[in-house]
Length: 452
Ligand code: MG
Image 1 (spheres, rainbow, N blue to C red):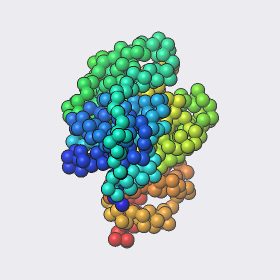
Image 2 (image 1 turned 60 degrees about the vertical axis):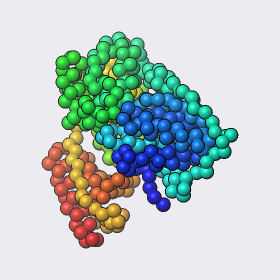
Image 3 (image 1 turned 60 degrees about the horizontal axis):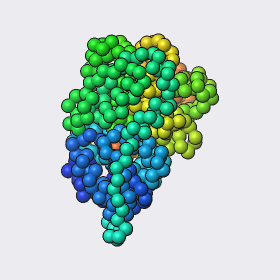
Image 4 (image 1 turned 120 degrees about the vertical axis):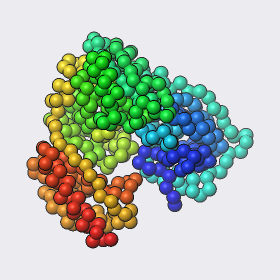
């Protein structure tokens, strides 16, 4: 049976890997499985109106009722599905991918993207010729759904608006021409912040910057923070589920630092609670959770896996190092605008500059690398590595995570999407992190060479 789904839904280059015909059949297959009333949303990509139309047709063809939410962030559609008790949602988006890409995220009735098992069921229907079409007299309707306003108000209801308003924060926002432009500036203004923006027009060609916010492509936001003397800068990815922060000095901080800030505050408010995060997350997160008397629920890498673990184990906070924070009291999925509101509340309550808050967090040196490995050798390589590695503690939640007495660690993990092994290491200093990576890179290469 073929595969459609990657790590976050179905993605591809439009009209090459991902055609209108394919998406219509995918939507019909998903509709046949989810059944009932389905919300449809889309991001601002140039190909999204085309895909929205075939998604609606595909859903109608199998007897679903369609609620069209228009252009909005993915988490806004997820909120609507759960809040209104709909049977599911289909979001037309390729998240942070380049403009020639598009894709579909399939959302279950609980607002979280469907599990791997449900994806496989959709693939089964898709590859066995698609679902049975519904008789003419059972074709249902399409109606509008206003999901954006209720979503904004839901976020505002989860923070202390008076405290944030009282702090008169200056906020610089960079939605990267993505759909966070429709939520984040309005929310920040409602919180009494004075807001300046860059790349705040929704434009599916992403003329302002790459759609994935990374510290190295946020020069525009950094300059805006300085020019507007902002207290904080926030950059979002293309579909608004991730946020990356820039402090008042113009320094960008990777997502595990902002997640650690949120986790530290969450445990101060909710002592002893659990926090879910993938095994690739920084020890800074582990340290603040331990210091707050909390417990980490480690998961495999992938935001859907973290969200699903939160739902299954009743965990109310989750996060990833790429700027995806899942705040369960709002919804157990990544939400960039919610993350922004949480950081604004922390800044308002603590009073100090954001650089000071980040400076209080434990700092570790990180190192990443990769080793090419043919798809068919990944599993055996992992098995042999497991026998050959030497570390006092070896964890096998996802790949191999080796922990050392000095607190350093390395994760050796086969990529789910590329023919490579990924190596991530973290240590007290760069020399140590580089040393661990170097040593294990050699080992992984040796093992692959011996199997080849
Ligand atoms: Mg995204």
